[in-house]
Image 1 (cartoon, one colour):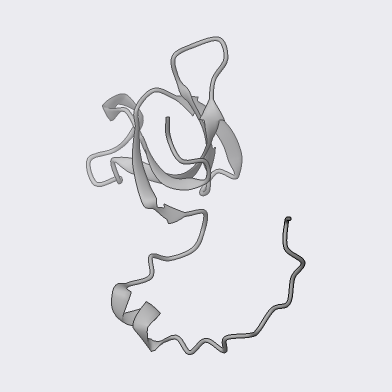
Image 2 (cartoon, rainbow, N blue to C red):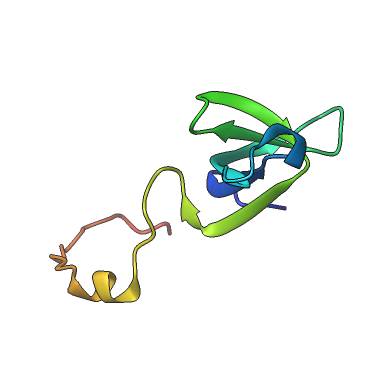
Length: 89
């Protein structure tokens, strides 16, 4: 199982690219195709959903957001709030 919404890279076949064109396009994983053994991916550049078997997954990056480093997380300043709640018992 793959993580829904993670960043993907859709392979562009050799026949459909020129010598200096990129080998893959960025996308967002949407799920599995029902009829074939393929993935449903939103192609960011084309703005449409494509079905492809040749996909690489980056399950640490989601959607259109850039990857956040551990140093960036350490620099974040959070205010802790006291939250009152009723117990489940």
